[in-house]
Image 1 (tube, rainbow, N blue to C red):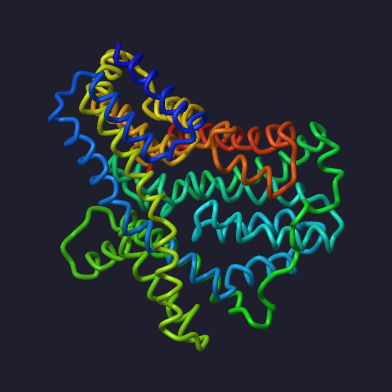
Image 2 (tube, rainbow, N blue to C red):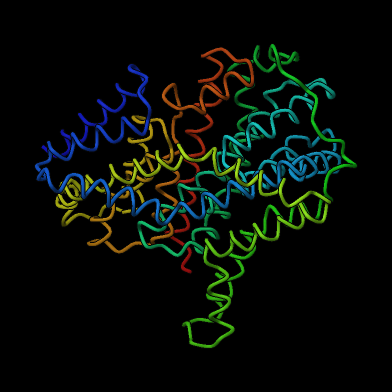
Length: 448
């Protein structure tokens, strides 16, 4: 019965968002309240559950999410991301242009959210495709594969960061595993998948013209942008700090009370790493380039203003998750698995995949999955970092018409519905499945 109520709730949420065009946050609040009542949660406890879920989720993610948006905006406004992309393209050469796009997208994707990275890189892809007289899709598929993989597998992106907090996973370990998973996944889902897609929809890959209204120009001259090295360092500094702290911790063994170890541990915290990186970006992407402090702060304020609704939607996903916990759905599912040897890693992937297909938002699907998986973790030991990444992998699957990314991709590349399903939807599914396969291999053969 609890699962039936959840299924009805998801169906209603889908109806509210897709058919009635209701705001996603409002729809999540309405469905969370309705599902809580249907699950038998006392009325006085419903609001408390929603507040706890929303506040608990945002309390963990808001700082990282906000600072990440500011860091990305500074990198974009100064032309650092532009410099990264064009330099890599020049060094890789025309024959290996797909790999240049992958590396550029991977680096930019670490610092920027998926939608921001897509908007930022698409003019560069337009320019490259026009100058080289090649299909836009040949460059576009590797680009979105890299952006999607970083979005689902690498902190400080909201999905893996939030889920790591919910499961109690070591975020540095999540980052290390995430890099191991993302690299081969992007290779398979980018250049390798391109060869398959060319056979599925040859007409789309034969198009050389840009979509109507597309502009191949950019706002920066290369000589006016920051250097390649400092741009890469600014984009990658959060990853470097978190990864270095985790490596030192693993090599050091058991933690101690020494000042050096404490400092390293604090620096590796996601929030602290993001703050340090933002301060670093103030200088590398701002002050050192003669940009007034007022303009730098204006960029930061603008970035923060644009993530308000994103934060509410993430919080709404946390509220829905908490309702499932308080309503006993997770405990009910845990009972179903009692006595079985079901892998929490596989279970997390399946649940996240079902929610992703139903709800559209990868982040909401990932956060909502936690409420169903946490009780299973209590009775079946598992590597929490791998469970986190399995949730992220499941949340990438089968992006279709209820996902904003589907429509962004379709319009940016001027594709038909069939062509979008044959490339974007299939590619996102392949990212999910490849991620799961690598996660299961790590779970079976590697112990860290």
